[in-house]
Image (cartoon, rainbow, N blue to C red; front, side, top):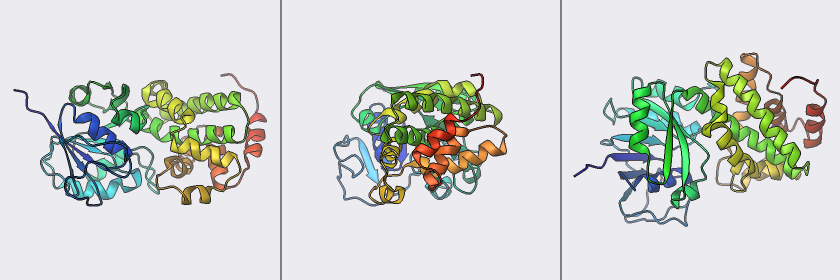
Length: 323
């Protein structure tokens, strides 16, 4: 008889619920929610249409006995959660960050935050082109799991792959994390171009050229630029910059139609990570001497410094260059 691993999913947002549901196919799963829920709860607010399998335990108590921990909290809340969690877990229990973006003020990626708050603990990052609702419903999906240690990430990939979620191992965690951060910013720009009725050509150009400038930034920071052309890069970017279910893309569409960003954010109960990540990526480009014209323009659009048509003119007026 095979003993099922115990996987703790920390965070009951849409992605946390989806991962809990899919991992329950092959593991015993505990889903942690910050807000206590009544015993026997089988539906949660962020994916109310999904009924949780009976094998998932929902709790507001942080785990102490998990074999693997998935951190599915917003990047800006990752530090507090991992500080509280670290002493409760055995030292060899691996954690997997499943959030995207960069910590405000520190410019740290999720795994860099974990290295500070959970020193010495084995850690990896999970990222890829997946809408939570489809994963929760058991539709086929793929993602990248990355860590620097090849043996560790290969074993972890085998343990977390399920019949409907295929994972690919990578040894470029920096590239995977930067890809996940940048795609949200680029998706806002793609949405703005569509909302402002600039056409599909403009959206395709934004996606392609922003992908290239992000790859240059990944290389400059010590990652592998080719990661941007895999699941965590191109795959996730295509989904996020074209799918109607994308929070960042839909925010951009509303901005392109002339809506005020403060009004858009005020009526939402979900996070559009690209809004917070854009200025940090812009700063990284400057710090490493990499030209990031599209990311820069999107950052200025979000701050209200440019209108969509001013941004268009600025990008089109740039000097010609080789691709």
